[in-house]
Image (cartoon, rainbow, N blue to C red; front, side, top):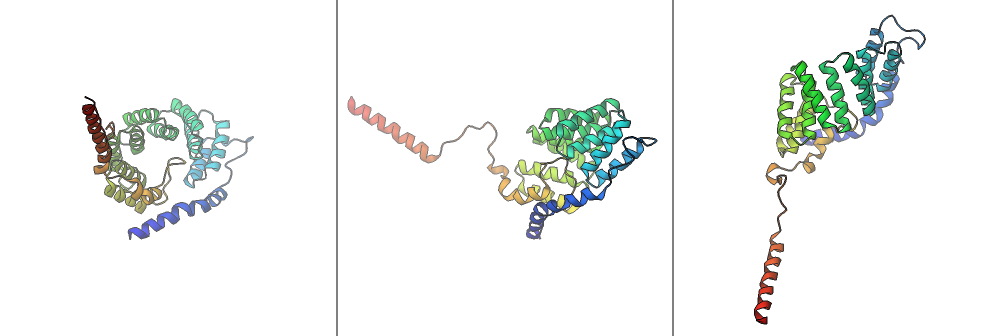
Length: 269
């Protein structure tokens, strides 16, 4: 069973993605209205952008929200959907910039989580953690901010705190493939290789193709395939700050050298 799952992961991770993009791109239209004829309200753009996002058609979502912002520049929903699309397309700085405008207009946990993922993609873990904490302070039961917090803490090498954060997210949303995936990686980093495998396999069982938060975020499939070589058991891990130890052979050579020096010194006397 495990070998079959690994084979599935290899095939799914490295063959399927290459063929899926054109299908998704062709599925959706360019959005409502024309640049010269705005709809009666912003909800038309929001609805169509959400449909494009649901289909992972980031290019179309960006086109729709760009048109929407032309007519409704102060609509926080359109701004944040555009920022989300930028993030999915790998334009992280632009994503953070646009979502920040939405937050100024209407600060909500979902928007702090949206920007937090942008900061994570940029490697700005302190800013991501600040957004996660702010979102949690607004609504402690909104799970995504706990997920952002876990990843930010992991990026700062604070894995014990990260595990507590992802456990909170799992308690609120136990069927999230993303949270099982994140915890699997955290367990692997802490040397719990058996637990890591269990959580990664659970993530894949829930949804092998869940929507990853940003480009370059390694999938659970890839993590599971690499687990045998990437996970170092806790008993074999060297604590940070531990000075390097000399091998017995090196130590023996050093002792022999010292004895030789003493003998030569004695003969000279």
